[in-house]
Length: 181
Image 1 (cartoon, rainbow, N blue to C red):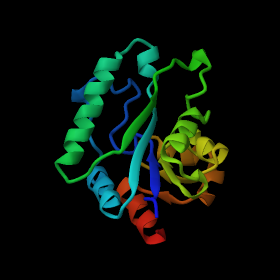
Image 2 (cartoon, helix red, strand yellow):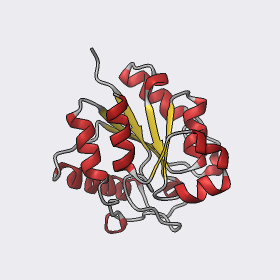
Image 3 (cartoon, rainbow, N blue to C red):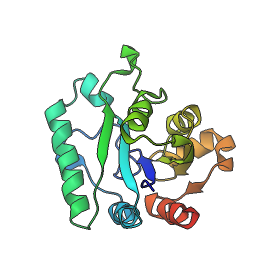
């Protein structure tokens, strides 16, 4: 049997988000409990991948090398609690570029499906924005909204999202996923 897959957004789910973008490794700070939650998923046999829009690259706020350094910090801090990410998929494009990978478009998810050969219909996607839920519905996969990051504002602006599983943060969402598993 293949390992189940779970997809996570990055900013606002794993780490604190910023309206000014996370532009350096120093600005990347994990949300309490998020890294140990990923390690729990690993121990339960999940493959964990990240799908994140990183338009700060396309906007010229940081380059691919800096993005790589940010992701190296994420991987290092995650390893210190016994966790790992199978792969990080990202869209570096500016929203005006009209690429196929920027969420809510499903290009990153098609890449994930192709690479991991899994039916995403049974896969959870944990995010904190309306765009994340739109993406999950378009794929389709199973959306979970966390209230960390932009989650609270998202729920206030889109009360219809109250019908999907909704949790305070990644740690609480992972508890739900592991009970469901």
